[in-house]
Length: 319
Image (spheres, rainbow, N blue to C red):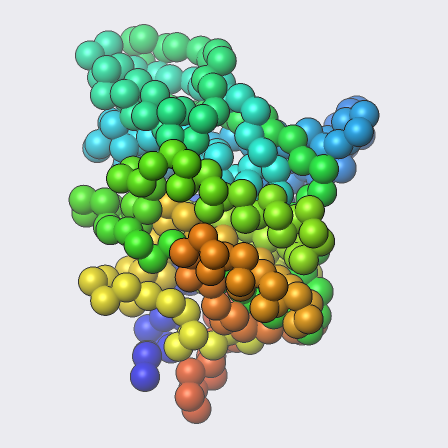
């Protein structure tokens, strides 16, 4: 039995969740201008969606969390990884990336670039441009990515009664002392991309319409973000969440995985989705059910606790 009180307290106060809160102050500032293009989705998803002539264009950007910059190779690698995952999470395929690098010392550039190059080679996505600040007070890296898709998986599309699926590659390891579960660095490019393409197949076959990649808010925080944007709640069976034997469960719930997605599915499609992940040696499980009450509830045996009540709580404030 797990301690639900501890889980609720830890996740609600986790920096990876709380640092999403300021987003709400930005959204209304930009909303009036989203109609200037062929905008389908702007804020709230893993990537913005624009209607193209015969498909969709996806745009995403990520800045690397300052704590990762203690390991510049890993920061560079993750700047590619997180963007690639954002595109596949929406059923898309990456096309190209650009970056912005700020360097405190020019000798930092070597490790940072090595990480970026390794990521480009791993996921076969080119870095085609960017901007360099060679003389800043701190070292930072941000990457923006473009992708395309014919059908979209969206954070706004979860429906009442759907199963909540958590798909994670458990064949990995914690990277140094970071809350990162590395599942890609030591795998071949072909294996990594093959696993990611499951998301394309799910979208194309319309087995699911709602998905997110597990990001800095961790497993429960990311599921919460999907529910918040969809205007839904959920009952999550905590014991059903897959986990490694090598990590404390709370740390695992906060982890950023190299490969991790949450999706919602009509019950008749759930086994089809689970089997697609299984073929790629990705462990996928049903961990809960979408509800209409805007409350994310955790259950374990006879315990029941509210993690987020979106009638009053916010993660990003996007609905």
